[in-house]
Amino acid sequence: MEAIDEKKLISLLTNPDTQRSAFEKVVRIYGEQLYWQARRIVLTHEDADDVVQNSFIKAWNGLSSFHGDSKLSTWLTRIVINESVDWLRRNKHFAAVSTDDGDAVRVADRLMADKYFDGDRAQALLHEAVSRLPSVQRTVFELRYFDEMKYSEISRITGTSEGGLKASYHIAVKKISDFLKSAD
Image 1 (tube, helix red, strand yellow):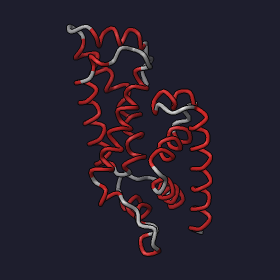
Image 2 (cartoon, helix red, strand yellow; image 1 turned 60 degrees about the vertical axis):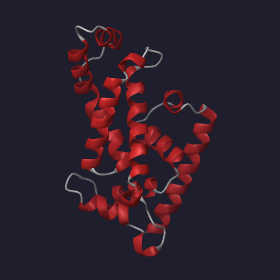
Image 3 (cartoon, one colour; image 1 turned 120 degrees about the vertical axis):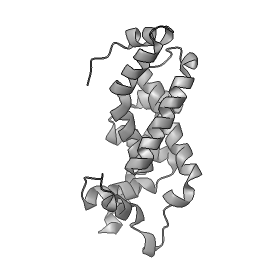
């Protein structure tokens, strides 16, 4: 990954003469990280690609609203999370997980069938468990567990207090643990 001088990059983004090339650099630097953030939420490669593309379009269109109050990566992550959640709402019938025994491994089975998923059954079950969490707990868990973000940064992304985030994370861990124990 390229070394990032965010202040310089933001300066280039605000200059009309360098804005386009600076944004191309933003896509190169943050594209993969944002892809994996979206992928954990929407689960499939194609959907994550769509979410990231839509997120970059929103970021490009919203450049004038970015004033540097947060890190550029935090701002982009917030856009991807919001776009991912919006995607789930719009495509609820594709992403919904039933709790009856017949559909208990639907997400895990979808992941195992996805040619871009390179995990094993345990990872697929973890994603199944995470997919069953309410959206706030899911987002907090994913940012903390997968991205190893500090609560202070998650707080800036979600607008939730650190104490609330810690509680949500611990509740999420308990629910995931219970799900994985019952999946044995």
